[in-house]
Image (cartoon, rainbow, N blue to C red):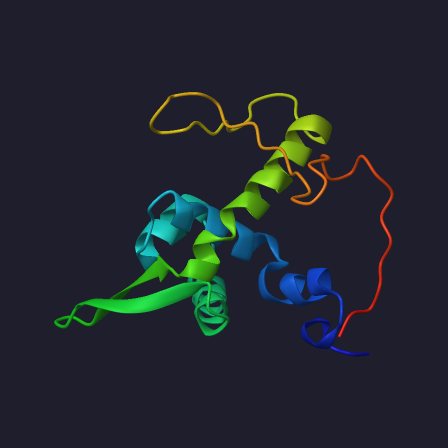
Length: 143
């Protein structure tokens, strides 16, 4: 079986990078301003070995950049790259789907820090202006 990262489908290639829940949640937390190992660990309750592996993979794949913030003792932080910053709309699209199909009980809500309004994302096709999911799709292999 081919690795997902070698598939022609860009969804498959992207899932190869961030397709597990821990990676998605690390990216969510990075967007809220967390940068340090202990901050991610406390927020997520993730095992240190798992967090180390996910941070390494996200760094290697170019979504996070590792930066040294202390020499003694040596300490690094993880900051979003351009690719990492571009991932936020993906997280919000997943959240919007969850709001519609998995809500109930206590849920986290996201607000615009400047306006205070709740964020309600909509994915629109740039060419037609139609909301994605309202028209039939066709998949074509492009070179």
